[in-house]
Image (cartoon, rainbow, N blue to C red; front, side, top):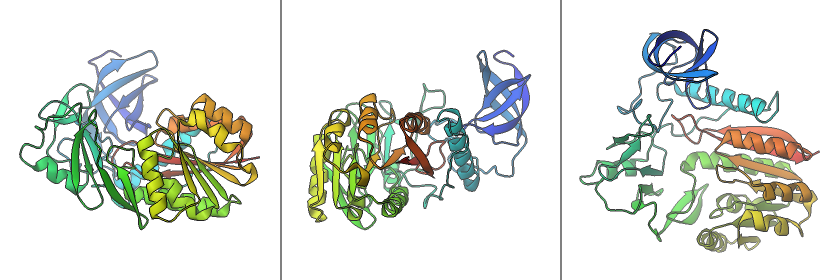
Length: 388
């Protein structure tokens, strides 16, 4: 098989990145925008020792799960990978992908994964998008090089789409790429990724008003963040934990939402600006037992856990995509909080860290996936671990 060859194959599976997978002469071939069960013709665009990548040319036998994507840029824009798949099938594929990731990377043959609850809004959910280029702005294409200009994004909030459709929307002068951020009231801000965006905006999550720095990390899909918070609240309620520590708390979203379940809550966050917002939110919500510390988790977690009663402590981990550093995992292994809640938007990294934690004596009790990013191959997953 060589680059440029036309091949016919049956798609047997859809991998974690969203591409369909079939075989030609025993070699795995990845074909994006296809569905398991389909017979397709594809052109080989890359070959490696153990696999090949191809672009679809024609779908000879279509899956009954195939639907018409609503976005005219789908297939050229790199933002979405699954708009061609009926939404219930997307959820099933993501659950299957999580199980395979946990088996292959996490070393768990039978991961106890729950079904993904449907997102309340399969479209129109993103409260933040990042546009690239220097005018007109757009999204990075599927080739990872070109910029696809857009005047509408089907997965973005309607307020963002109104701004995208406005004359001159892509001509703003910014430092870096252009960010459009929409709050729960439909107000929209634009700023550059290297600008100092000092505004503070208000979000409402589970009937709690939270003030958040404009450029601070915040969940892009608030209705699904509420699903996650409700699941974490139920897990905490079922435990015997009365102390909550949050190692990567950001502006305190989950710390504040879960604080009613515990006698004491501690949040650790690298950004002083985010910590100031978390402290202000704790005061506004009358949660005096919530405390926040501005420091990297790698430095602060061990000292923060030391005085706490580990037999009654739940540690919440919501790290960046790269996962927990060695110092964080070492602090957990030496302190051994009773319960760990590990939230991640990068399931392979979650599986890697869960494996390392189980090697120190923790048991994986449950996996809870959530569709934070419908129409894309990405999703959020929560691992619940407890000491043996």
